[in-house]
Length: 404
Image (tube, rainbow, N blue to C red; front, side):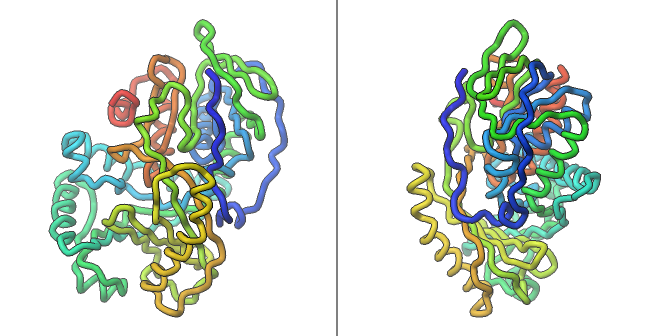
């Protein structure tokens, strides 16, 4: 099958990429054989490559640009167990037990990412954080109480914060919030590069600026054709951000354009002081976090994706909209905007990723981390696909697979 045409993932000035700088990883030759070919060298591809190498597999990673310069560079890297679809709503879609398992699996993935980050030479600025999910409408206090009660029933930690307490502790004007300490944030580009470095030291081959041209099944092998050579592989795994590989129905995913900015360093982080991350019950929601060098990051104001030109044309307007939002929270002391960018991401109806075997294949897989939990989903994908590629079953495939 031919690779689908390239779409530009981002525009503007992505903070993480500029903060960390461009890295020339060279152009390794394409090996003639591999156990697994991973398409994509962002955070998902890096975690997959690292897992496969630790499992003793020969790994080839293909990246048409440089590692970490695609979807990873525009991630705002909030690590949460909370999905874009609340647990109460997800239970109505999947059943209560399945919904609770999805939430618990995301919670476990945060702990796994912490362990992984601290096992690396560079932990990617992994920091534990408090997630504050703010109710923006009058009826949200009751809604959030129901959400908390269902989470508590299934052993998922959260706490209801009253209107008065929100004002006292965070200086926020809202009806209520759910608060949890089971959250974190990272520098996604640093983490991806650090994980990929370990995979390379373990024997993985990374071919940057090497586009996938075609792939096909030949007996029990996958023949992978690139612009720089051909490789025979036991399996192929697509970790291509929002871009769908052949074999995935396009109606499973909706594409959105999202916008973000980062300010100059702030003397006072206001409600973000102490490591809080703030997001809203409104849809589309706006969210806030800080960076290790005390900048304020805000993102959101999503719109349906039409094309890259339309997305990019909206960047100045959406940047001003985010600046107004920040001014409402921080007042006139708000630092100036330093970086602003636009990116494209996908979402599914249930807020869960698509991870598993591609339909009609036994040795072709994809890890498509749609929704607001991309890096958390990446860790789940490394665990799930590590098992599947080893010929083992995995109970999470029924939750995240393509046939759910």
